[in-house]
Length: 132
Length: 204
Image (cartoon, rainbow over all chains, first blue to last red):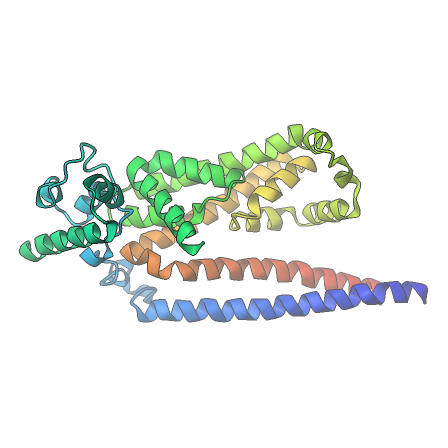
């Protein structure tokens, strides 16, 4: 009897914990599959047709996707820009170019970061538009 | 606060672009050791940068795996060698004799493979399990084996996701964190259900 009374609260805690885990498991499964479906609709996870097809077109980099944390080296590389194109177009004087970020360059040039980022995006977009 | 976290994450991404594999190794190592740095985000990003051809994907995998395993083993062996002594010198030596410590030790001894493997996916829990495994003198071969397996799965999952997502990785990183949470919940529910069934059988 005494043992039964001691076990009862422990059992209740375990029942509560099990139910909580099952609810959290169901919720996390729902959220995950919801996201996975959204990705499938966006063109990812499109099954056995091949990864190369699944990776287009959303993974193709666009100039608006350039961020302030990106380095010029990286931007030149992924957009196939000539090494000094952005340096000349934006009149960047920093000696560290292209091994510096857009944010660092904006600071060195004394231009607000957002304004400078828009200039980088515009210059990249205009080069991409000119080259096939 | 969100802006601060976001700018810190941006800083780590810049480091990966500037110093490539060295930065990836140091960030992953420090995160595996204990410090709260966005290691998972940087591993996904490194996969995405490899997808763009800026980094080499097999090298990303190897660097992240080596750094994570090295960080975990540093925590494990340091705790094994100095853990109890450090607790005593901090006046926390009594913790080793508490029932909570014994319970945690029993769980680790009952489910070492599951606990070590699954906590490799949780940046916050992994270092604690490394230290606890070291302090409780868990079998070294067992720890190293499941650490390498877990970290291997973690690195392939995260950097592979970055590689597949490419430049869209920042838009879809949520699915990965939710997927990992789902895996964790499966593990936790399994342990709790086992405890429940064991208690039910004992009581009956």
